[in-house]
Image 1 (cartoon, one colour):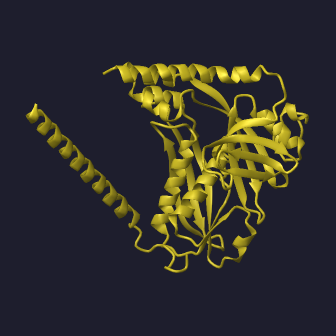
Image 2 (tube, helix red, strand yellow):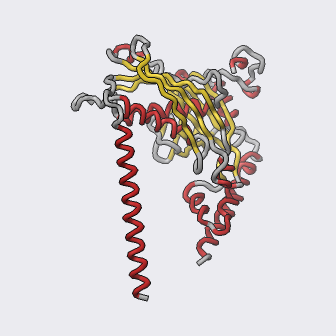
Image 3 (spheres, helix red, strand yellow):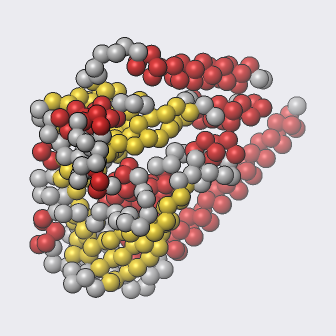
Length: 182
Length: 176
């Protein structure tokens, strides 16, 4: 009985250490990915335009949820002193304003039921073309990002995933503001 | 060993049946609804995501009252109100997650039971002109009623449903 307990203990400690090593490796990969841009852009303010979905039929709740999630995640990224919403009059006063335009290029509404029952089917995916422009309308960065929900969660969770990925793009391509200016 | 899992399964089944029956019971009352049971999914300022509460429409606007947070959307700031349809697991939350551990795939079986819900998306602009989007979910069939009350109170809507009294073929309704 004692030996069995000992074995169980050692097995669990091995499992925990493996998990720890795995998470450290993943964390390291993420930090390497975040620091890939050697010349990050500098801007004190960003304005996020309403999500455009002219060519794709996108439900209103998805469009608004994407917009709100992008604002939330860009704010969390902590790269700008001000994050302005679409139509905010105060944005005009910002000297080095960057504008983010998001255009939906693809939308596949999956089924949460299928996902939960089969695990592999029923994926919801939103493909969006991102464009960061400066005050003169010149393109700074262009990128395609996909928000997905594959296994767990309702369809709207794809908008959260999209927001997270936009936040990652911002973290990667923009420099953090100098300390004391936040 | 199976007893706790079995009890979770049985309780989950009971809750799912009760939840599936709830909207039907609510709709048989026949009285006009003035207070809506809603969930504020995202976008309502000073209210956390997925907060459950009650929404009422008054002259001041749409008032949301959750257990811990309150929010208000003035009618004059509302730019658009749109409704949609979705569904959610009949057994959700922690219990819904726990049912995934139930034996013999019964958790997956429970995932087949979903209840229809309505979504209400409100686009509004704050004092400095910034666009916001608030998303609510309501029991099936109630989003149009809440939208009708908002439109009657003076809120703008790009798509007017028959319930709100504007002809379906109107210029505004054709926008979408």
